[in-house]
Image 1 (cartoon, rainbow, N blue to C red):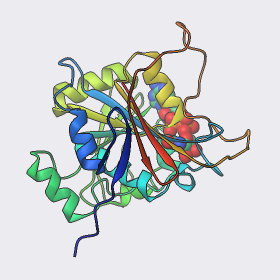
Image 2: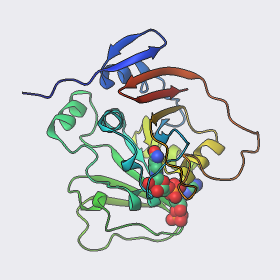
Image 3: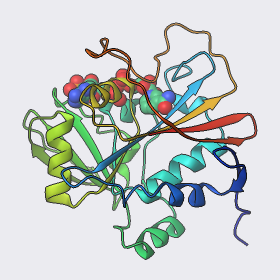
Image 4: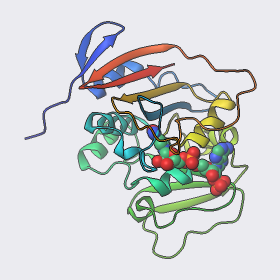
Length: 250
Ligand SMILES: NC(=O)c1ccc[n+]([C@@H]2O[C@H](COP(=O)([O-])OP(=O)(O)OC[C@H]3O[C@@H](n4cnc5c(N)ncnc54)[C@H](OP(=O)(O)O)[C@@H]3O)[C@@H](O)[C@H]2O)c1
């Protein structure tokens, strides 16, 4: 028997109970993609005191409801953009690990798995990460330097030599890989770069009811002050599952 569908309580705008899939269908991300580049949605998790990790990893922060929202966002995306340092720190693997997820993607007219997209200036790629051990997982690397995957990599890796900054990468993904929806999963430095260039359309932020209290842990965005000052966002929804809040800002 399939597991029961998890329901999130919507607190804003109108109160309702709905699944992550139904909530995201209502966000109509694909229909709202701009023409010249993909729509960029970001998914991050933060503690009450604004920390993005515990002991250097975000996986110790979120609950199953947070993971489910992330997996559901992956199910709707053509590509998952993630910083090399995040791939190094977190447990990345197959981005559509179950046949049920792949079947849902096929039924929606999407590739079986979202592309994993990494950008690097130094060419320092964590080849021993689980992402590269996943057979059938397509990985695109945009690199400033010449790169080749080492022997033993099971994922299907393509390397593009291109200016590895977000705008040309997004334009290339749209033009050459027909990508319309990108999910960026961080980390904080890559997210800063996307925000600084005005390339973030949607922010999905999970607030977990925990206080980390450790100055050595990063915040969800890390970098220099933005030239135009703090960037304001518009609140689109507030969902709740247990003690966690799921905020969506446009
Ligand atoms: N709370 C959350 O939701 C969440 C989400 C994701 C990650 N994290 C945590 O964040 C930490 C890693 O984040 P991070 O900020 O150190 O690294 P990151 O953003 O994952 O990766 C940064 C790397 O991306 C590459 N890069 C290429 N182009 C870039 C550009 N235009 N701007 C910025 N980076 C660019 C650089 O690699 P090269 O040096 O090769 O050029 C840079 O070192 C981990 O501890 C992870 O657990 C938390």
